[in-house]
Amino acid sequence: DTAVSQTPKYLVTQMGNDKSIKCEQNLGHDTMYWYKQDSKKFLKIMFSYNNKELIINETVPNRFSPKSPDKAHLNLHINSLELGDSAVYFCATSFGGTGELFFGEGSRLTVL
Amino acid sequence: GENVEQHPSTLSVQEGDSAVIKCTYSDSASNYFPWYKQELGKRPQLIIDIRSNVGEKKDQRIAVTLNKTAKHFSLHITETQPEDSAVYFCAASLDTGNQFYFGTGTSLTVIP
Image (cartoon, rainbow over the protein chains, first blue to last red):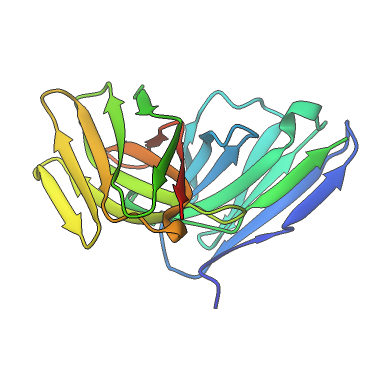
């Protein structure tokens, strides 16, 4: 069983569209994150959720909205996609917000 | 917030030689320092970590050193092998958790 899984793995869409990326974990971790990795490989934290509460939002545009229906899921919704949103988005989890981060396989978003 | 700087951005070594990657951080409250390895097209994975109450930690060919006074930590890889080729990220985290700040990555190439 994959510990942290993301869908879709690849997403190609037009500017202005709205899209979602889903993340599910079966590790029982209480903290989930979304990271953005751009073409230069920089890993930037976007959000983290602990017990269904948003606790970090690192100056991310409000076009991005995380939604956590339960402790095992953290989905990322993106409205009005822009060219600069093209990147690989990683979901990650940790226990207690400290210690090892477990990453999903990543979702490569391409905005045309 | 925390600022993590990482050097060098690229590193090429001959197989069998050692590789050293250095990171500095700005927030003296940071006390957890993991290193992640990301192979091409894959997810980042933890390879070693160190907490602030320890100055050095070793795991086979990999070691990490921490100097809290100077606020820098380093990754040492000895007897490098071609499969060590990847992008390596350092990170710093506060004890309160939920905040992992990554360095900008080092692309390591081991030449056979």
